[in-house]
Length: 60
Image 1: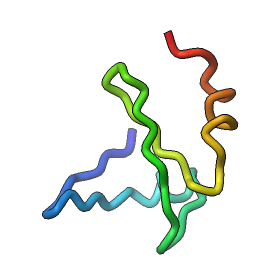
Image 2: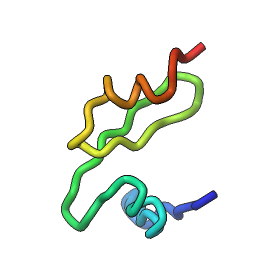
Image 3: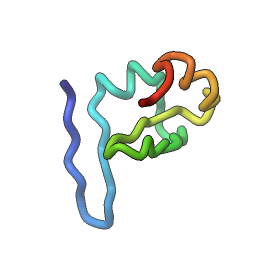
Image 4: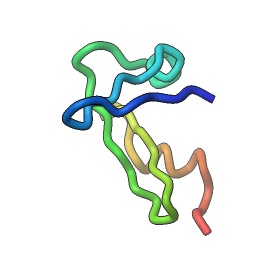
């Protein structure tokens, strides 16, 4: 499982594996979706949250 370290000012460098899976490049934006159970999702801005929701089913 890829991991990232939080640097000064809260900057996070995502590992190349994560960038590849999300198809992100320099300058792209992500949305952070807080699930409410201590977990978050990173969603590329070019994908809709509704589309991602259907991938994970209903949160219990």
